[in-house]
Length: 122
Image (cartoon, rainbow, N blue to C red; front, side, top):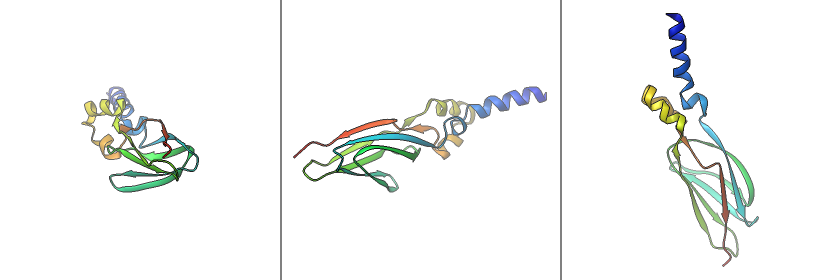
Protein backbone atom coordinates (compact mmCIF):
# COMPACT_ATOMS: atom_id res chain seq x y z
CA UNK A 1 0.00 0.00 0.00
CA UNK A 2 2.85 2.41 0.82
CA UNK A 3 4.32 1.70 -2.62
CA UNK A 4 1.05 2.67 -4.35
CA UNK A 5 0.69 5.84 -2.29
CA UNK A 6 4.32 6.78 -3.03
CA UNK A 7 3.78 6.36 -6.78
CA UNK A 8 0.54 8.38 -6.63
CA UNK A 9 2.27 11.22 -4.73
CA UNK A 10 5.21 11.20 -7.14
CA UNK A 11 2.89 11.51 -10.16
CA UNK A 12 0.75 14.12 -8.38
CA UNK A 13 3.68 16.32 -7.39
CA UNK A 14 5.58 16.02 -10.66
CA UNK A 15 2.56 17.22 -12.62
CA UNK A 16 2.29 20.55 -10.83
CA UNK A 17 3.63 23.46 -12.87
CA UNK A 18 4.63 25.10 -9.60
CA UNK A 19 7.27 22.42 -9.14
CA UNK A 20 8.22 21.67 -12.74
CA UNK A 21 8.07 25.14 -14.32
CA UNK A 22 8.55 27.54 -11.41
CA UNK A 23 6.79 30.79 -10.55
CA UNK A 24 9.15 33.11 -12.41
CA UNK A 25 10.55 33.19 -15.92
CA UNK A 26 13.61 34.52 -17.74
CA UNK A 27 12.74 36.62 -20.82
CA UNK A 28 14.94 38.42 -23.35
CA UNK A 29 13.91 41.79 -24.78
CA UNK A 30 15.94 43.27 -27.64
CA UNK A 31 15.34 46.99 -28.18
CA UNK A 32 16.51 49.19 -31.07
CA UNK A 33 17.76 51.97 -30.83
CA UNK A 34 20.25 51.73 -27.97
CA UNK A 35 19.12 55.10 -26.54
CA UNK A 36 15.54 53.89 -26.04
CA UNK A 37 14.07 53.64 -22.57
CA UNK A 38 11.24 51.20 -21.87
CA UNK A 39 8.97 50.83 -18.87
CA UNK A 40 7.31 47.48 -18.17
CA UNK A 41 3.83 47.42 -16.60
CA UNK A 42 1.38 44.79 -15.43
CA UNK A 43 -2.01 45.15 -13.73
CA UNK A 44 -0.31 46.09 -10.45
CA UNK A 45 1.60 48.98 -12.04
CA UNK A 46 5.20 49.55 -13.04
CA UNK A 47 7.48 46.51 -12.87
CA UNK A 48 10.83 48.00 -13.99
CA UNK A 49 12.58 50.29 -16.48
CA UNK A 50 15.06 48.97 -19.05
CA UNK A 51 17.20 50.56 -21.76
CA UNK A 52 17.88 49.77 -25.40
CA UNK A 53 19.99 46.81 -26.45
CA UNK A 54 19.60 43.26 -25.21
CA UNK A 55 17.98 42.80 -21.80
CA UNK A 56 17.54 39.53 -19.88
CA UNK A 57 14.91 39.86 -17.18
CA UNK A 58 13.50 37.62 -14.48
CA UNK A 59 9.74 38.24 -14.19
CA UNK A 60 7.09 36.72 -11.96
CA UNK A 61 4.59 34.65 -13.92
CA UNK A 62 0.89 35.46 -13.66
CA UNK A 63 -2.22 35.67 -15.83
CA UNK A 64 -1.89 39.36 -16.71
CA UNK A 65 -0.11 40.59 -19.81
CA UNK A 66 3.00 42.77 -19.58
CA UNK A 67 2.98 46.09 -21.45
CA UNK A 68 6.31 47.52 -22.62
CA UNK A 69 6.15 51.28 -23.26
CA UNK A 70 9.26 52.43 -25.18
CA UNK A 71 10.41 55.89 -26.23
CA UNK A 72 13.54 57.65 -27.52
CA UNK A 73 14.29 61.14 -28.83
CA UNK A 74 13.70 61.30 -32.59
CA UNK A 75 11.62 58.07 -32.61
CA UNK A 76 7.92 57.28 -32.33
CA UNK A 77 6.84 55.82 -29.01
CA UNK A 78 5.75 52.21 -29.07
CA UNK A 79 3.75 49.94 -26.75
CA UNK A 80 4.27 46.18 -27.03
CA UNK A 81 2.16 43.57 -25.24
CA UNK A 82 3.65 40.33 -23.92
CA UNK A 83 0.69 37.98 -23.72
CA UNK A 84 0.42 35.55 -20.83
CA UNK A 85 -0.62 32.08 -22.02
CA UNK A 86 -1.30 28.80 -20.21
CA UNK A 87 1.69 26.52 -19.65
CA UNK A 88 1.20 22.86 -20.64
CA UNK A 89 2.17 21.69 -17.16
CA UNK A 90 -0.44 24.08 -15.73
CA UNK A 91 -3.15 22.49 -17.85
CA UNK A 92 -2.16 19.07 -16.50
CA UNK A 93 -2.36 20.51 -12.98
CA UNK A 94 -6.01 21.46 -13.65
CA UNK A 95 -6.80 17.78 -14.14
CA UNK A 96 -5.05 16.80 -10.91
CA UNK A 97 -5.89 19.51 -8.36
CA UNK A 98 -8.19 21.79 -10.36
CA UNK A 99 -5.16 24.02 -10.97
CA UNK A 100 -5.52 25.75 -7.62
CA UNK A 101 -1.84 25.67 -6.66
CA UNK A 102 -0.65 26.64 -10.13
CA UNK A 103 -3.15 29.50 -10.43
CA UNK A 104 -2.31 30.89 -7.00
CA UNK A 105 1.45 30.78 -7.59
CA UNK A 106 1.29 31.96 -11.22
CA UNK A 107 3.16 28.86 -12.41
CA UNK A 108 0.36 28.00 -14.81
CA UNK A 109 1.28 30.93 -17.08
CA UNK A 110 4.18 31.87 -19.36
CA UNK A 111 5.34 34.80 -21.48
CA UNK A 112 7.17 34.67 -24.83
CA UNK A 113 10.83 34.01 -24.03
CA UNK A 114 12.19 36.41 -26.71
CA UNK A 115 10.80 39.74 -27.89
CA UNK A 116 12.25 42.35 -30.25
CA UNK A 117 11.16 45.99 -30.31
CA UNK A 118 12.33 48.37 -33.04
CA UNK A 119 11.27 52.00 -32.77
CA UNK A 120 10.52 53.91 -36.00
CA UNK A 121 12.22 57.26 -36.67
CA UNK A 122 9.99 60.35 -36.72
